[in-house]
Each structure stands twice: as C-alpha cells, then as structure tokens.
Length: 154
Image (tube, rainbow, N blue to C red; front, side, top):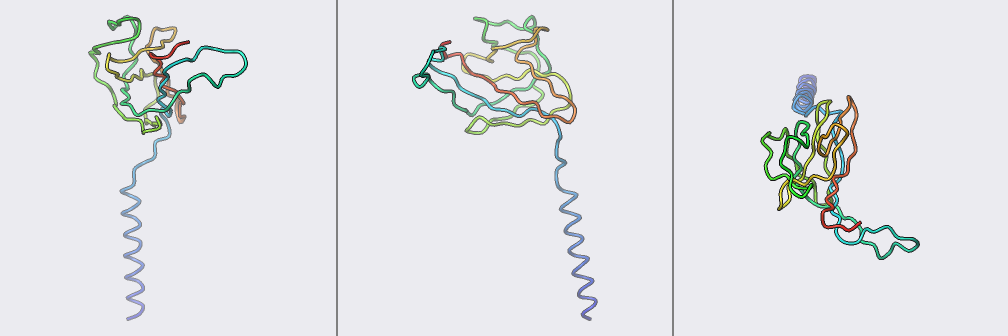
C-alpha cells in the first residue's frame, strides 16, 4: 500500500513537471533591447561644469516596428514627422515607465518609430536612407536608444 502511494506521488509529480515544461514559452535569443529617452531643454555642449544642462529621462511610449522604410517612400514634414505610413507595423510594443523595452525579432533590418502628437518621429537614417534603422543579427540582442529629442536644444 505504501509502495503504491509512493509510485502514485512520483507519477503525479512527473506529470505536473512535464506539463509545466511543455507550457513554458520558448525564450527568444535575438531581437532589440533598449530605452526610450526624452530630451527636453538645454543640451548645448559646455566647457567645465555641466550641472546646468538638462538630463534625458526614460519614458513610456508605444514603439512601432516596421520592415525597413526609406525616406523616399514617405511624406516627411519639417524633416522630422511622418503622418501616415501605408505599411502595417510588424509589432507594436510599449516601453515601461523608465523607457525600457525588449522586442524579440527575426534576423534582419527594421525601422523603429515612436508615434508622438505630431506623427511618427524621425531623427535618423542610414546610408540606404532607411529611417531609424536597427539591425538584428542571429542569436544577438541589438541595443538601441530611441531618442525623442525634438524639444531639445543642441
């Protein structure tokens, strides 16, 4: 009787363990990890004491991940804002209150954008004219800072 109880207990424990292992999500090994940072105020370079300069802060934002978007495929106002993007985002995620985010993505090149009141904010492009580019390599996490600096002075 005691042997049956022990075997039954072992089988139940093994079953629970196998179910919990099977239901767990597979950990992604690549993508983009970073921070959304808000820059507002004086960021002018100075000599000596920098204590008067403003400091960037991490902020909560929705981040839109697109296939690579070229500057030539959008209507961009003030060299900074895109109102409409005809492509659907691959993913939309949200950074936490400190600006931290992590997106699992397949290997490849992407455009990462934040949507502000005036539209999608654009502040960089690469030699191929890809807006806010980021490249994900196999089995690697690409670190980025999404810099929202349209209210900063440099």
